[in-house]
Each structure stands twice: as C-alpha cells, then as structure tokens.
Amino acid sequence: MNIEAIENLLTDVKNNVISIDEATEQLRHLPFEDIGFAKVDHHRQIRCGFPEVIFCPGKTTAQIVDIFGKLAAKGNNVIASRATKETFEALTATGKYENIKYEDAARMIVLKQKSLQASDEYIAIVTAGTADIPVAEEGRVTAEAMGQTVKMICDVGVAGIHRLLGSKDTLATLRNANVVIVIAGMEGALASVVGGLVDCPVVAVPTSVGYGANFEGIAALLAMLNSCAAGITVVNIDNGFGAAYAASMINQKIIQRGDIDG
Image (cartoon, rainbow, N blue to C red; front, side, top):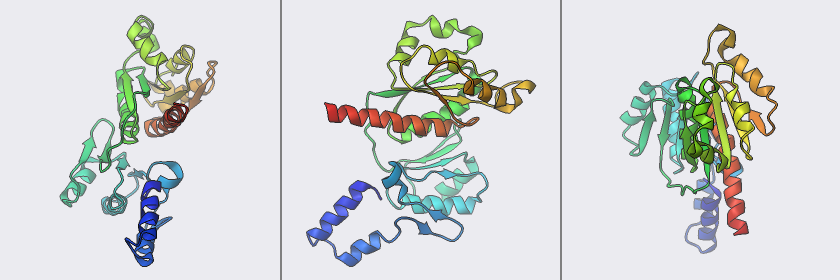
C-alpha cells in the first residue's frame, strides 16, 4: 500500500466504484499486519517511501517465506537481505513469484513487481579493493530496487591511487554523482581521498576486509569517523544496504526537487 494506492482507493469510494466496507477491508492491515511472530509494517511505504525490507539472519526459512508473502501481496517490490540460496529456493518452490531473483554476490533476494523509472541522476559506488565488492553489490542491488541509477567504480584504493586520480572518466563519474558511496576495508583511507575530491555527500562504509589489526572492520570504521574531509557520513561495518538506502533517499529528494524547479 502506497500513497497513490490510497488516493485511488478513496477516489473509488467517492465514485461508488467500491463500498466503504470493501475499502475498509483493503485498509485493514494498516499500519501493520500481526502474524504472531512478526508485525509486518505495510505502512512503511507511506512513511519512508519504500516497503519494509526483510533481514534474514535469525529468522527461520518458514518465517521468511511467510513475511515475504505478506509483503509481496501488496504489489510492491520486495527485498530480503543477507539471504541464503536455500531461502531463495524455498520461495521459488511456492510458485507464486515470477520476477524473483537471487543476487549471489549481494546475498539478496529481490522480487520486482513494480517498474520504477530510473533517472539519469545517479549514485556512484566506489570500492577500495575487489574484496569489498560483495558489500558494494549489496548497495547496488538495494539502490536499484529503490529505483535509482547506480554507477560502479571498483578497485581504486590508496595502494594504487593513480587508478583513481589518473583517470579523467573515473573522476568525472565521481564529480557528476549526486551521492557517492565509498566502500573500503584495511585502513579505510579511500573515504577521505574521495571526500576531498567531490562536492556531494559521501557515505562511507567500512568493511571487515583486512588483517588482524583491522579488527574485522573496526580500524576502518574509526579511520572514517575521524576523517578530516568534510561531508562524510559513516554507516556500520559491511552495511552496504544502509548506505544505499540513505543515498537513495538523498538522490530521490534531489530528483524531486529538480522536477519541481523544472
């Protein structure tokens, strides 16, 4: 259920297309649907602009399948993050979903039921190393499911900074983005470098990639939090989803403002 659907529903009531009782039945599960082990938040699309996303770890396969079905029944796109291939196979076995896909690198299940028109205004996702790509893929899949255009730049970390600074095309991609997500492990220095090159918000994602003193991402997290480059915000370790969600909200506001001004 989204704002457009509610407006159409109220219009149908006004024009006597459906009865008040029928409309009430459609609205019955707002703001949430209690299924015992979970309260599925159908109202989130209206509040936040995108439906609830299923975080899979800690849930049984049966629980995920049930929640997924409740969300899918509303006709929106559905995302399940940190999902296993076994969970995907359980969902496909139901035979209910045609446009469902498992993104291996991102470990995400995506069901596309609504076509979202992507704008030329884009989010750039940059990784320091190839080992950071799984987190970047989680971000890419999230942003694209939210209707955003994404451009990826991979493996341009500070150990070979000429790969970033020596490419006019790469620099142009960064500087023309509305938001840049920088994903780096080890010492996390790439976020500061990019933050000093662009005039847009930078969302930094520390990853758990690194040797012992990296402390599974804590060293990169602290480096990013202590960056001297202005305009950088930092999300949790390996949280490509959270970075992309925030970046998508920022980019969408910019796009909407451009439509209004235009």
